[in-house]
Image 1: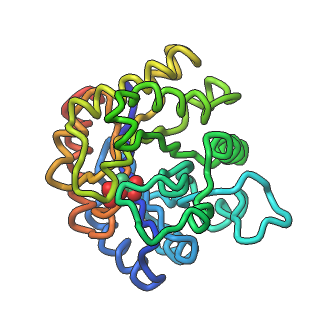
Image 2: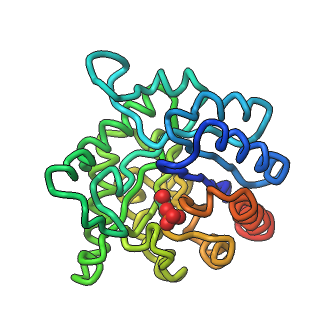
Image 3: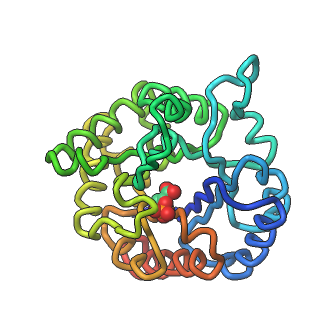
Length: 276
Ligand code: PEP
């Protein structure tokens, strides 16, 4: 099997330019040269350019935390795929649950009016994924159920529906080249990761949805990551699962030691196991 695990760090709304550059300077010697793993960091927009320059001679890829679907125009505050490519991005996260207004740790201070700022839907995520691919950026498409959806027994239906809607209209080749991140919303930022066998089961469902809609070749190539409280401690359990092709890492990606340990674990698993 040819899939190479992808370990992507989502820095969220953290890190000044100077802090971000320092972090990748600590990361590069620990991660560059690792075989059979791809590593990416997704800084906030303000740090993309500087971090991209710091990564110039590194194997670590640069990703954005979101992308808009139009190339340019009257879209105040948005960033287009060509703008992200201009600063060195090759990846863009799309449809993160926080951008959909679905939070692992509910914020009581967020009124419904204020929450509307996090307005992504499957339809907007689909536009973003299409636009990213159209310009040559690889989307990391996030899906996952909330705790009430899980408790209602609706996990599989919710996740499968998100995958179908977010990927609608893409070609099998496009789907083969992107990454899907299974991120149970209740596991994000809570320190409560999904149990590895259950994460593996849902990642397998995601792959089977891809197989049904886009064929076996796309299903065998698409990378399905797990995200939600991944740490250097649980990384081996999660990433050694056969359906899990790496991780989308939030909190632990802000620490060079922890994040590089996760990348090292993925590299060793990939060399030892199914990626040989
Ligand atoms: C994330 O930001 O996508 C994420 C999974 O965060 P954390 O690892 O902090 O749970």
